Image (tube, rainbow, N blue to C red; front, side, top):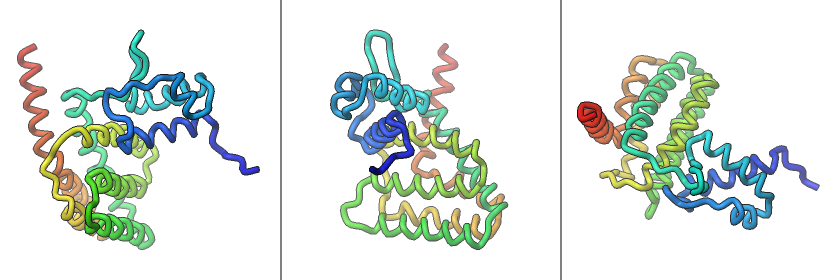
Length: 224
């Protein structure tokens, strides 16, 4: 018998997390404990614990008398997430460049090569490109050797992934990986300050959004 090291709760949380991040459940979708328990062949208690785990990650929320649903992010939520991503990714890039080794550089360049191949495939979707974009940045986070930073980033990136699927941006899929070349090379060359600046510039997909949300947030605060 093959024994899983994960508890049933962890397995359920992993499955539901993947379903949400893959877009099978979208913002606002209701998640019924009894239905999920039946579909997953688990107890409602196990499903509830899994949903609580996802709630701590910002992926689902629970309202009294309304039950569970996939999180719907407000403009203010996105404004916060955007700036957190800028802060975390730029710091991680700087730290990764400070501690880079030949072995780490090989891993980083290989991850970028995979990303490039994905972007060159015919019919590749924005969901797939976003996944490999995040995989590259998660590796940079890992190479920074900061467990706390990695934990914070996981929560932010999960919520950001939800938002990307429900918005429409002028997104150049084919060139997405190429925009990361300078960042990767700066890290591999051990240039912390250049890596930090390029990490900020690299979030080009969200730069205009960031300015827009900042303006709207400031306007709202003035009105209040």
